[in-house]
Amino acid sequence: MRLLQLAAQKLVCYCEISNELLGDGGMTLQDQLERKLGQAVSFYLDVKFLTGSGAGQPLGILSDPALVVVAKETTPAQPNDTVLCRTSSRCMGGCTRAP
Image (cartoon, rainbow, N blue to C red):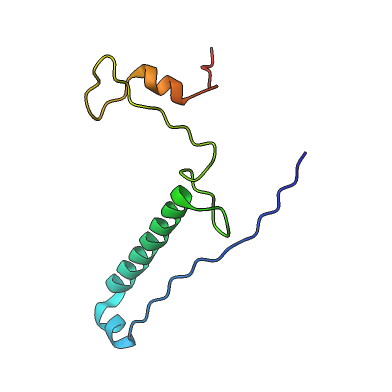
C-alpha cells in the first residue's frame, strides 16, 4: 500500500460592505452576496480542476499527461457537433462493459 500526503490549501473570498447597505438590503442582500461569493469560488475551483498545473494547485485534466485526444472522424462525413459510437469507444480505452 502506498501512502499519499496531501497539504490543505485555503481559498478566501473577501468583500467589504457597509452596515448601512447591509441594513438597507436586509437578508436578501446578504443571501445574494453569499450565493455570488459561493459561485465565484466554484468557478475558480472548476478552472483549476480543468487547467491547473499541479504546482500548489490541482493538476487539471487538460494538463495531465494522460490526456487522450481523438481526432474527428472524416470518413464517412461526420456532421458538426456529433460523436460517432466508434469515436467514443476509442476514448474509453481499456474500459469494458459488465456482463
